[in-house]
Length: 178
Image (cartoon, rainbow, N blue to C red):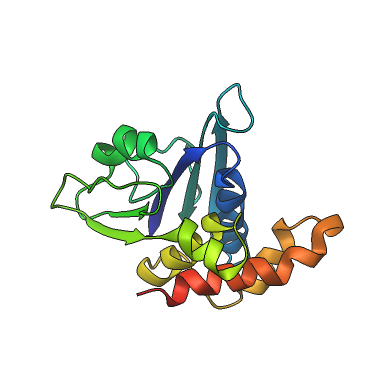
């Protein structure tokens, strides 16, 4: 049985919940059992936001992620808050454009991805979240990059269909980042 617990955290407006929804749909399309639990503070933009995603071969008993296998920290407060909750042997992805501090653990694998800078340079400044999802697909076996177009089409609303290709480009940018 394979179960992966993922926590994505950052400020409201960074696309934390959207990123989690993408992972959940990607899991569903792979015939996995999934749970997606968004959480955000009282401010929609600028407040705290996090999203718990569980992708499993078995039914998910609880949507709560207290010991994530993977943490995606999009800002410093999120890294500080959740870094020590990641299981030993887990993965931490950090947006190194916004977080200059280093992870204070040697029992996890950490990837520093300048996602915000990469997004700005590529012309999709609001898609640092998708760059980090691409990197997660590269370094974790919980979801694959194959078939990402189908998942993106599920989460991008029909009225914003013009953003499907740019989201896929952002995911590919993260997937290809070394």
